[in-house]
Amino acid sequence: MIQITKQPYTYAPSQNPMVFEFTTDNANTLYFDLIIKRSGSNEILSKLKLFIAPNARTSYTDISKIIDNITSTPIDNRSQFLSNLNGTVTYIVEVTGISATGTTTDNKVTSGTFHAFNGRLNNFDLFNNKMNSYFIQSGYQHSFLSDKPTASYLHYVANEHLYFLADNTSGIANIRTVLSYKDGTSRTINTAFTNPSNHKLHRLNLSPRTLSSQLNFQVRNLKNLKVSLHNSAGTAISEIRQYNIVNYQCGISICNVNWINEFGGMSSNTFQAPKERKQIEKTTYNTNGYLERTNGVYSPIQKVISNRITNTYNITSQSLTDQEFTYMSSIINSRDVYCELAGSGELYPIVLDTSSVDVLKRKYTKQHNRMILDFSSNANLSLEMMQIPEVVVKAGFDYDLDIIF
Image (cartoon, rainbow, N blue to C red; front, side, top):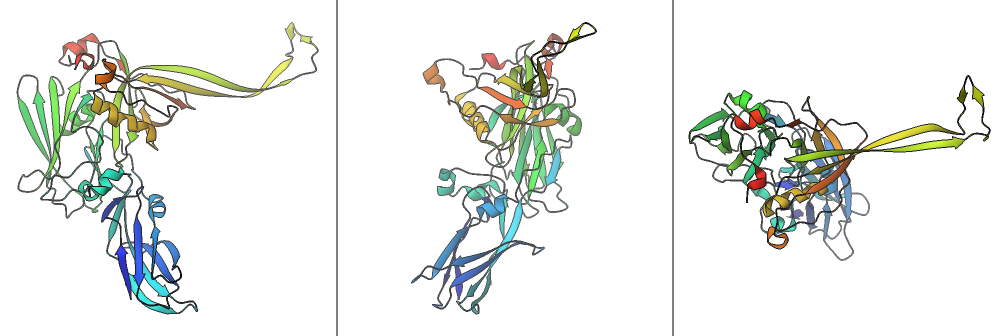
């Protein structure tokens, strides 16, 4: 008889080890025949043979590379407030014992149901059993898929998406948005959580420019907004995230950058002063070296037969707290980084050229620290979103990150 003696967490990030260990009490079993299937449809995802070492009864395998190939973080940049997304994988495993002659020695055993999402947690989170705290469940206050501090700054033209894991058993009734204004007034908006296809991954569009039209509120003089998930009794079943709405100094050019973070959600930041540099690579050949002239034009001695232009960009962050610097430094490890195009608001994929970042601490540098990044693209990007006009600043956005201590 086969026993599953080790298995992954019920909800696990696909980039961490996902180890199954099987043990048999039958000495005639040579290997375990393992089939990984998508739960519900029984689509076969992979087949494996796990041979048992001599004088042993146990074998194991890490299926994370198999599962990681079919998980993803879909990016929905549409204006709607809530999107239910694919990208997670729900699977089971079936294991059978097989002898050296190919006969069945242990009857098939089927595991329980497991779920995987596109993420990678650090080893301390694994050791401290925080793996399941990223799936929303009633009775807890679990986490969103974000590496930002729970209280963070958000530029009023930023592109911000907040992801979370939940299904129709999680008990989410409403998404609560609390708006606080500079004059001391506040407003609470409850939006019903709908998930008709019982997806596991969801996205909230918290970009102030689009959120105001989706939830019908005024952005002018908005000081901060708080977002949380609540059950039917009105009890919070998620952490509460607060975004303090800010503006940079008048006249500073800005651009938005988004990236998939280690939890499988999306992080963002509004950078300053984008600078562009063009570099050309040319393939040339030399002619016979003789000058010829036709109609007053000399023929070239060297000709260009192909060229390739690369655009590189340099961006600088606002002044960062130590906590902000730490979370933003993870951008260099992201597989997917995007910049927002001026005018259209669409996200365009980029490749970071910055491969290392010194994680600065204010107590050592004795100054406000900024992060500087370089990236390249094969397209001529229009990054400079705007120069904040003075009339906008006077309309209520008089915050300035450069003076926040």
